[in-house]
Length: 367
Image (cartoon, rainbow, N blue to C red):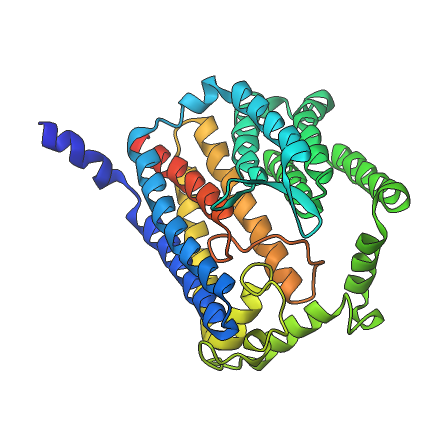
């Protein structure tokens, strides 16, 4: 009897989703290793070793959450978690480490911890609880406003770092959820109008000069082909030069000769496309497509609204980050510093994303 109780969670565990996630991480590790070997720097190889450690840690955390953590506990501690998110975002502004102009990391000595990655999880939990209880009232404008208040507060704190990429991701998550929930057309028009007004105010009074230049160069890379438009131009060249099968690992000219900055994070898709070609891109897209397919299937099979919204929110988060990162590499969207989920280097991002998958596996086991 005891053996059956132990085996039951493993039988209900979504192994196909787990394998797809592991394959995505391994694909990312392969590309990170290729960049590390090509660059010949100790830091790049150290990043690879760190990512391997975080991979092992992430898998352990994922399985631990899936087997022993009941996702429904999050409903009870929803507001406590949200308060913790605010504390983390406030603390990092005063005590955080500044990297590339953004004060968004806590320096723990052996690695830097980025709280915004875990705030994404907390916001997903908060919005999932809110919409699961009030989805039928979302047609009323006041409930739409109520749902936005908590999001706006978090977005403002993240923007103060300043990390506009993550702030846009968090706001985009809310937008996608209200759209999927069924916002009224006139309410949607009001929201779009407010966003446009806010964008104008940000352009005139908030955005720094370098941020305005980044947007201008995105709209027209030829304005500064050797400056701010250089990164995107090199990424597009790398992607286009990969051909069908790619140039081979460690043989990508753009990535290995350091024409591509942040090649292990922001532009890892360009490295993959150059060294593994169209075949590598198809493999990447196939793994993501299969992951989204499994997540959508789990959302459909969920028996309670909170679980459904938790899965849908996770899909929305991964999808937005996927589109923003690859769109930036292709020159279709501005470069915002958003990593490619499970692929790019980054311990905080990998662990946070694995926690979300662990929560979803917890749903699978307990429905």
